[in-house]
Image (cartoon, rainbow, N blue to C red; front, side):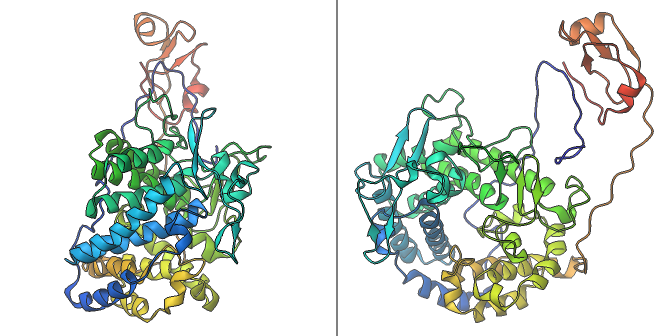
Length: 485
């Protein structure tokens, strides 16, 4: 037994995966906007579209995480404007966004330029020692991201690149849909996406899918910081990981790069599946039974924990796994899990939780569970300041209302009631396994390598190869009927 479930050692010549892709990520929701919610949505859009980016982010100065979140937030405002038929607002917001992205990716950016690392093959931000009083980077020649893992979440050492650059990629995808991106924009946006996605195994500049663990299906956010953590690699926000690959797909679509679009869709589907298996504890049978919380806060190679990097408040653990809010979140968070999580999140979100913006994700969760009317009323009543707080700065009222207004109105009627406690799916009852039949011969010669000539002809390990003869206990301990060739 492992943290990822029951592991079965096998020997084979190749490993083939069949991945259900599900619906492709899209900028627009799969349903139209509820007519009675449109007036409030238009009012919110007018307010949010009137906002401007902070001057330092607009000129390409700051950190790559929070700037990226704000860019993606603005991109959603543009997307909702387009969905409402307000093309002028969509174009205006996208044009401002494109100007900011160009400033960030300009090689001559004087404050926070990107650098290419030839040793590891990646784009890293030089970093910015931000002077709050001057609203600028303190020293243009300094490179804080290269001095240690404490700066910019460790960007200079490849921590969280998919999170950071995924937000940039999403913003670029929307900007290039409603504004005119030229060849230079295309090349720079694709370079940023290739840092963490790279669809081509032969890419000489970047590694293939930098963060992805192909066996487990999810990504590891940790990079190359030294010394390594004794608990191994880690990833906190599975939802932001999903979003990064969703963004890569959308960028590929916007720029006409089919390889990037296909790679992003595949990696997103794998991350969605991993979220259900390894993070959504309330409805997963692969999270260890001793873990009693409905949501995993962070996974390590050798540890599953509920807390986050920034604190142990349950609202943090729930909220960080539910952002950002895009139409693809409907694919990310299955209805059964949403209902199982809702009472736990509601019980954990007090007044402080609401003031710090974590209540925004709770409202979105309510709508996804079928409580659209209540969620809509709560969203309209939110204090505008919560959208600039620690838990709300990636959200906008416009996008929250759009999410609520595009939920399936039939879910509430056909849904089972939300459970009062987070349930755990029952463990499957395994049938009695038949005995194995083992032996050498022509089949073994055809299907097994020379160093593992013994093949199992029957039982749950049928087709498996081994260096020694198969025994009944060995076959009975195998967990699946596998065929290897």
